[in-house]
Image 1 (cartoon, protein in one colour):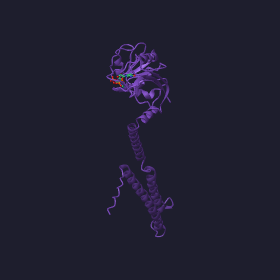
Image 2: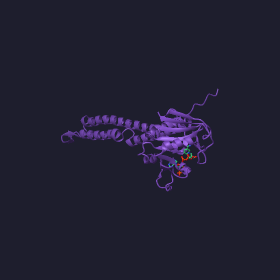
Image 3: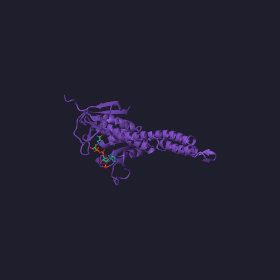
Image 4: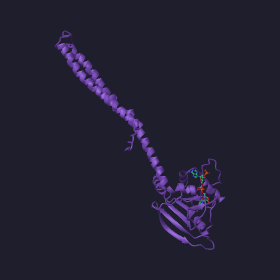
Length: 300
Ligand SMILES: NC(=O)c1ccc[n+]([C@@H]2O[C@H](COP(=O)([O-])OP(=O)(O)OC[C@H]3O[C@@H](n4cnc5c(N)ncnc54)[C@H](OP(=O)(O)O)[C@@H]3O)[C@@H](O)[C@H]2O)c1
């Protein structure tokens, strides 16, 4: 019996403005049309006034009847009106069109950023892939890390495990190269590692470091500082791995086969972006409390 209420269509401000301007435009054109009709009737009336009724029959200007000049003057006014409608007040005005265009662009940008935020929330891996596409990948830039099964890499600014073969491998791979790291990782060493160029990323403008250590304030500057090294490494920690991943084209990951409590993590490795190219497993032994694997990933 009580049917559903019809939803009231909402017209937003821009649509209303568009309708009002269109209505004004129709009125302008209508007025021009009426002007044209009145002009035709008026001109005929002036001709009749002169030729039939005989008003001003004797009045001539340069040998021409006065109504010719009257009609020409009116015609001039009509042409001015026509010009005004079609040229000066071109369809809705240029500035109006430009304003509409920039509003439209702003709306589209807002929609895109909303969609991006949604994708980041619901599909974090895909969104990383999207960001990676936007960033310039650096050839041979390698992320080197050791992470537990749950991606833990550290706790209280320290490593969680001691695996001597992993440390040896780290030393072999990184020696004589640039190693890029976050300020916290740098501080976790106590002193710089021998035979490597340290590039430390910090937001602190006056961060003090021992001689030879390079301080930069963002990833791009770190990569720039390492540009003469054919094989620079990103050595952590969690914040820096996350930000540098889109630039890297290789990951050397030591996967420790255990879950650990921690407060720093390696970012998720998206299999649609990264391909496993090598996997060497290492069992537990007297020197190694946990089993682990050296896994190499190459960007697809
Ligand atoms: N298992 C592994 O392979 C491995 C490797 C390395 C480290 N770790 C562990 O990871 C933990 C440290 O990682 P973390 O994530 O806490 O810290 P981190 O990444 O080492 O350093 C974070 C710091 O880097 C600076 N930073 C980050 N992004 C920046 C940016 N965009 N611009 C400028 N500066 C920026 C900031 O320094 P300021 O605060 O000075 O501005 C920030 O506090 C430790 O537990 C460490 O032992 C593990």
